Image (cartoon, rainbow, N blue to C red; front, side):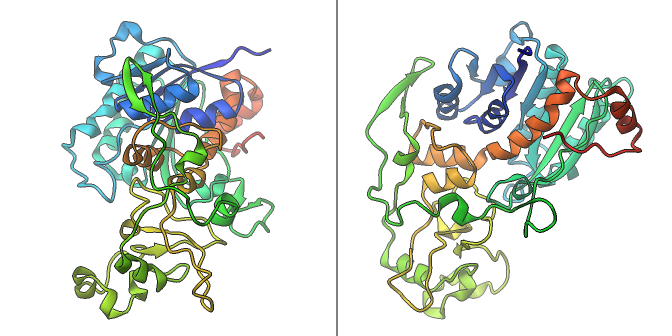
Length: 389
């Protein structure tokens, strides 16, 4: 058997990227780093505790960084996000420099950075590009970067992410999409909300996680919880229920009658269209963020809504279990943390199926299986490399 491709996952969160790479077969995690305890515990519950470093990445000594074939990870993106301040002085934006430190000491053949769509327009990204120039810290690496849509790779979600691939073994282009909206152009059809959550109970039986705790890194945390444990409902007010009942699939706050509008909505006739929105069964969801359990934060209402039958409507936000499935976490994934902590883990994660597509694409390069002639043509840009299955 071929030697496993060793990998390090930085800013690993609950393990979305690792999940995708491991499912692609042939990859072996040798180190992961995560600051938040609940997320680190979730990672450890699924992939093992020994190679997970829980704590500040800046406090990991150089001597503890192992050699690896691959480094993956997404430095915190709040400073770049449309929903954040986009403050170039946000200390979280400086953590990409720690990523570079790991690259310099582990000397991977390839590294992958994942971040929000606006990352490519940030000051930090411009500095990252400079470091790949002559005399830069990453001068031996050639970068490829592109905005990828998760739906194009099998996720039932229209989530756009910046992907950066750095390679010191020759230029590597991005994987080619495997899915498209109609499925009529030689690719698979986009996966839909129905494909992901259509078979789940419409009425969750509980509103709280089970009372269980476990220990990781010498600390007690809630969990571990199975996927079914995450199918938890809420107890909305009557006003919220009345609002939900007026919103059809694809609709939002603009569908509400005046007497159900909040003051800020009544005074602001334009702006975000997905607030208090309802998903559609036959389309991918919009981006699943960290507060998907609050309909006032986005298009998070359950898609079931019958215009002619008020009894055939599901007036609630999606559950944690549904959000995890829309993010393409496997059903056997287990979780640690409180409801809010797990929601943050789910919303911040890279969809594992997108990570898997990247992993499958990179594998022949990392194993040296790309024919020499093909690699040479690709590096000159005269032939576009089509991802190997």
